[in-house]
Image (cartoon, rainbow, N blue to C red):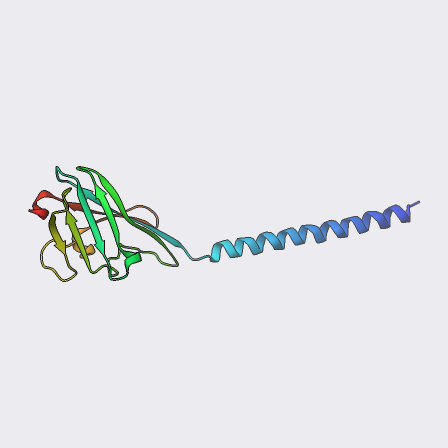
Length: 153
């Protein structure tokens, strides 16, 4: 009546299929768990815009030589100053703590303005007050500092 060998073979195949399906389900659930438990990543971009009629050199001076950087910004152009990311954070902003001063010069290397951390008035170090910040997409922060003719006169 019944073919016991075929029945037994079919049953073993079904058991292996069930085990395989359960393993796939377990792997999928594990992957979903890891993806959903990851910390969010925030990205940040900070730019400096030259709104003057002359090319400016902006030197970020640090006592640690490797940290110093120089930007050359043509009139009415924007240059990337800093970019970064943070895992687990939900907010980022530019940081200038590693710089002793920020020096703005013209093409002849004549110093037009020196910013220090505790200077009064418009100050590149004061991110919350003088940098324009936006969040164009979730956890992506964009900042811009403008250098006007009045800033360097």
